[in-house]
Amino acid sequence: MATKVVRRHTNKPERSVYARPAGGPSKTVCAFWAAGRCTREFCRFLHADAPPSSMNPQISKKSSLVWTKEGTATGKGNACNANQKSNAPQKINAPQESNAAQTQKSNAPQKINAPHESNAPQKSNAAQKSNPTPKNVCKFWVDGNCVKCDRCLYLHNWFRGEGFSILAKLQGHTKAVTGIALPERTNKLYSTSKDGTARVWDCHTGECGSVIDLGGEAGSLISEGPWVFAGVPNLVKVWNTETNSEFNLAGPVGQVHAMVVGNEMLFAGTQNGDICVWKGSTETNPPFHPAATLKGHTGAVVCLTVGRNRLYSGSVDHTIKVWDLYTLQGVLTLNGHSGAVMSLLCWDQFLLSCSLDDTIKVWAATEGGGLEVTYTHNEEQGVLDLAGMTDAESKPILLSSCNDNSVRIYELPSFTERGRLFAKQEVRTVEVGPGGLFFSGDATGLLSVWKWMDPPAVKVESS
Image 1 (tube, helix red, strand yellow):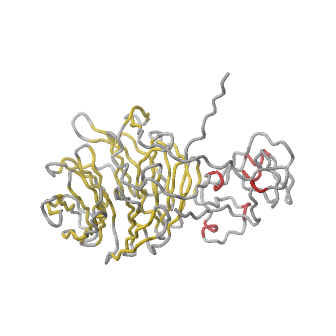
Image 2: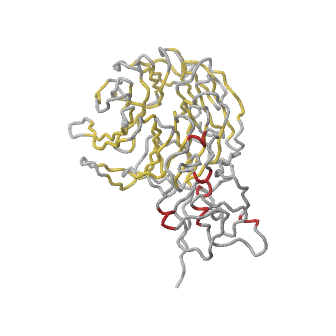
Image 3: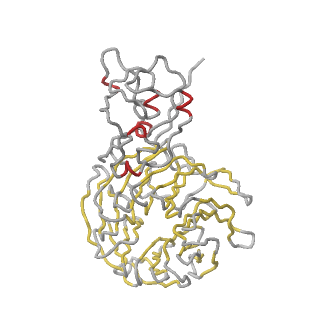
């Protein structure tokens, strides 16, 4: 897949470390480049990390999570992430760029073998240590207007953190991306947008192969097996990627904000608070027929997930409702949030929820069969979407999209921040795929492809 490389902001042209004059490149990393402050065009020291290792992280190993009622957390054993998708293309052929080469680092090497000469006065080691890597992206740089260059106190990059890299930026949508899906046994990536289109991307080239007119703003997108479902006002549009058939499912009232498949049924959360249900069948045409309409929410249903024979629905009415996946009867109403519940994630025996009340809550089963909040993580902004996966070392990772145009990357169960992704506008949807891939779609219409990198190999020396 073709990539768009985001380079550091600098007034000086960059020179490849692998094309130095005779004598070969220095083996010492430039401390001032690592801190984002080198002003020399032909610096004698290294201005890049070593070439990245091949990326083939395994995500089949998953870690279960344990949060105690006191708010602490531990991880142990193997588990199944109910929202981890395996129905995605197996590879994206794109050049890979080291995360360190894109991010302005503050951890300079401990040993410098020679003095550094510069056209500008350099700060002392103590001064450098007092200026850590900035945590927020520069708003002027985002707009292309920052004049401070390497003197800016804010980040001139679209992400910070280690262990992951950006593979591609897919541009085509003109409004917010509302859904990302990777159907099984295809090399295609689907996306929907508020611009009223669905785009089909080739995972090998990064090119958009087709644009589908949806006839209205898309509210959601999912895939299950060869089926692709797109929610639009008053309809669910359905495609089969194997037979190339397509049809519409009527019944929803208003926008379809969320969909999920469970127990051979399709569930769609709508603007009027209903959840429309269709049952799959091989004996009817189309192969889905209405099964039920679940009522109970007093506001729009904006998120759905399934796990442990339960359907969970979140609404702008601040509640989470729990439904029996077989009887389709409501069994619980959870009232822990004070704002709209934007996303739900089932992970092992836990339910994770996020809300515009600036919190992520972890729910666990009680002895009486109910659910209670066992851990609350507070954010500075409202939380829009959640997705779960494991990194290249099989550590559980939570992607949390917030209302400040960023995505937090947390290691669970401790909620230790591993990095952040930044965007010009809020990231409306995050999605995960196989092989360490994950995706983000923002309100400008940009779809970004990311990947966890393999950890560096450990060299074992024989005695």
